[in-house]
Amino acid sequence: MFSIEQFIAQLPKAELHLHLEGCIAPDTLWKLAERHRTPLFQQGRGAADQLYQYADFSGFLQAFKTICQHLQTPDDYELVTQETLRQLAQQNVRYAEIIVSAGVMLWKGENVRHNFEGILSGYARARQETGIRVQWIFDAARQFGPEAAWTVAREAVALKEKGVVAFGIGGDERQLAASSFREVFDDARNNGLRLTAHAGETAGPESIWDALHEFHAERIGHGLTAIQDTSLVNHLAKEQIPLEVCLSSNLRTGVLADLSSHPLRRFLDKKLIISLNTDDPALFGTDLNREYLLAHQNFGLNSEELRNLAKASFQAAFLPSAEKSAYLASF
Ligand SMILES: [Zn+2]
Image 1 (cartoon, rainbow, N blue to C red):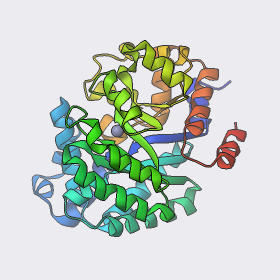
Image 2: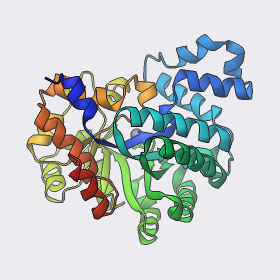
Image 3: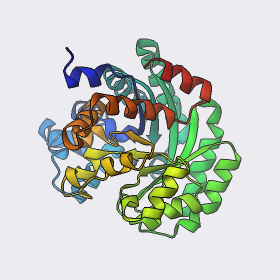
Image 4: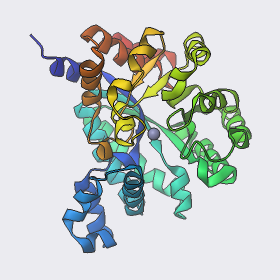
């Protein structure tokens, strides 16, 4: 007889909302600190661990920023990509769409294409070892404005043939009107990229409507506050627009006081397409198997429902339908 943990571990899974920078564990951060002799290195190994023990949202942002500052060369990106993909493969994640903060690379004055070469060589090694398949999402940050988002979208289009499948946006939802990014999303779509957006995480349902109307987003990152608007929930169900749910993330960033207030069960009752994801697993002290376990423990999802979530993670992927079918056939 399988335990629920064993059941979850053997499920084939896809990760669709995962930031590369948020996958970097303290040990790896320390390797980078040693490599570049950063201020963190001067503070000693304990400081790397401490960074992950933040108490509030600003502490989380500080940790994310410090991690990003330690990624300085294509070799750094190669290292973190290879390590991330090994961890995913250990959880039987067969396929992932990984968000790369291209907007942050540009803000740091780095060459996105050079860094992406590093990412691709880390991927090539991990794919050979584990068979994991990955496509990439280039993410702009709202607070950097539309000009910076244009540059991210152009880089994404230029690297489409190398596996960049989508353009997305993250950052502070409450800054700048969504309409200021409409043309960037139009252009990305016209150039064959798929579209996703963080929305309804820290702002209300109107932010999700904006992502649908202004960006034509095909998936919504988080989408928590959709539950406040019945017509929006009905629309998401009718149009089969998936939500990328990240339980631990919502708890650790403080947008939810406790997991029981997460609308996961209500979304499923309304027949929404839901994928479970980790967002920034190293920073939130989680992994994908644990997120499935949380869904079981907090919302009473049984093994059949967990299996359906795993299937939905492939259904919601930006993959050609033949490939989706192949993954679904493995259930
Ligand atoms: Zn995210």
